[in-house]
Image (tube, rainbow, N blue to C red; front, side):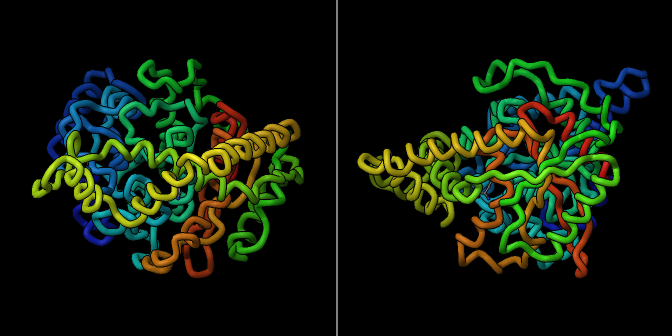
Length: 447
Ligand code: GLN
């Protein structure tokens, strides 16, 4: 049924970069046999899903939305891919994304943008826009994305789906192509909170192959899902309700807050005073880490190689010139500059200190409240092409999502209604470290 649906709609949505029909059907048949024998591999055995093309898949091309990785076929699966295969989920294919996960619209993909199923002229958000669009268009039941500064939550908000960025360290990054290693985190996207919880259950475990993976048992994420919000204290961060926000987004979020109050939660006004520095801090640290991570694409080890180059230096240069798109080049230059001798203290080190202040803001807020509630994105889905010429306006799409990555906290986006022109609006819930179960419960109460 998923393959039929994809054949019907993906010509317009363009969520998939590659399908693996044979592999998916074989996995589905194996799952059928297990289910008939009364021996399913997991609660989601047989449920078809898609993967952002940032996850290594053994024997299957993985490009990360970049020309430089075209033709790269990984020799192993990412840990999360292995976990899903072992749990019996057929992997239908690889999904479109902004090149190296840098962007908020999928327009950064070297292979063309994905279209928002709610309005094909608009972006599904990004960078996990292919994942969000495939889930929203019912091409798959769930998908994996990654979130460095909002790339799971913002596309979820723009497509009326649920997306969860777990606590840094909750899900393994082994075999996930690195963008900014201290911020990257893998997470599930689905159409309901329960589906999101079920997917997280399969992913949240310690992985000795990722040195930042937490040695912490995961709770049962579905056990308390229907527990409601009575008695919970929900913080409303003042700094997340200021200028530049679409009035319809603000209204929908304010109504959601009222609904939580009706359900028995207490709303608490809180302040995260360093929020105004988060965007600058993020774009310094993320580009610095990216410039270092992307140094490995040299034409020797992976994907594209400029075969006409004379000598090694020219081979490096030509491969990178042809292989990287403009946004990736911009960020490599920014990041290299921030890390260069003489500027390191002024930029990179300073940004690390501000990151600590942002983390402390959250820690003191969480002394008063159980979770924070805010809009996910300041605006609903924008038109494709509208922001490509102005990178700064694209960076501004992340103001509400990226502080959470700087602090390593879990964050979730869930559907919160529609604008008058029928565009989805997302509600963001942020929590304490490893408090994903409570976030899911809060989200489920509103759903
Ligand atoms: N839009 C942000 C960026 O371009 C976030 C991307 C992400 O979370 N991967 O860096």
